Image (tube, rainbow, N blue to C red):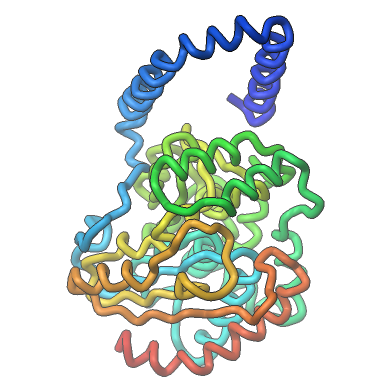
Amino acid sequence: MTQTSRRNFLKTSVVGSASIVGASGLIIESAQAQSKPSESNLESKAIEISQKLFADDGLAVPIATQPTVSKLAKGLDRTMVLGGGGEYYIAWYCGFFHGLIEAGLDMAQLPEMVVGTSAGSYMGSSLLSGEFGRLRKEFDFFGKFPKIFAKIAPVTNPNISQLRADQINMSATDGSVETRRVIGAAALASDNKINGDKVGKLAALLTGDSKTDWPTSRMFTTGIDCYTGERIIVGQQTARKNNIPLAHGVAASSSLPGIIGPTLLGQRYVMDGGICSNPAHVDVVAGSKRALVITLTDGITGAILTTIPHPIAQTIKDLEATGTKVKWIVAGTPPGISLVDPSQIKGALRAGYERSKVEAQKIKEFWA
């Protein structure tokens, strides 16, 4: 189903329901009362059908709830996890990695595996595809990059369907699968202006030649299936199996409800990977020898893009419990910062660059 037909179906369904209510409120009340048991049965049946049909796509990876060695990271030495945080954090990352490269750290080659969520998926993919190295060489870094990021910034003046998705997302109090489904339904039903091919084109600004293939085997992006609430992990193997280009994986991981997307990956509509209780998905690198983990917040303080609780410190402890040595860097944000405001980009670039001067030597020693 295309984006247009999907929305027309939703609109037609709503109109049809409204006309029946208008015709006979008493009949509808009786029908609703009678239908409740069958709706419950249908929900169970729907889960069964979905699991059967999608069992072989390899995209759904359960979030570990206790220390568990990841099949994707077992036996690896250096891994890197890059969490999300909107346009602000994409810019922060670019300034940070620009500074690390200046300090002699080849961040495109050192990690054997990179797990990126939202802004982190942009940065990781840009690094590993080689596009970031090309951009920083060809353009005046602090002059050109703010203009690039301005194109990635979401539209302003949200409509009511976007407000609904955003407000539902910002009302969440837990990260359960059921909560993710509710947020996912609102995301699917929002009339976002940035979606589909446009999202892929935006992602390609930083990922380069990645609109038709998944060129790097070391890059993994994350997301949440809007319909099932399952965690989605995409790497080169599953990407090629499901005909998912890297630019779409990045776009899906950054599809914030009510602002961008959702993005179609294979046959799943996927929203931002941060819409869960393990927003950096550190469990994916569990079992590697050393993991560099970079997140925007500590899960308690700082700017947020969802109110789902983020016990990042505990997930780091669980990662360490699998034998992985961790260096955790919390980027942090100045008070009052909007993570999706293009006017903050220039300052974020500088902040990331300055932070790199503090962390470069520590990272060298950690990965030596």
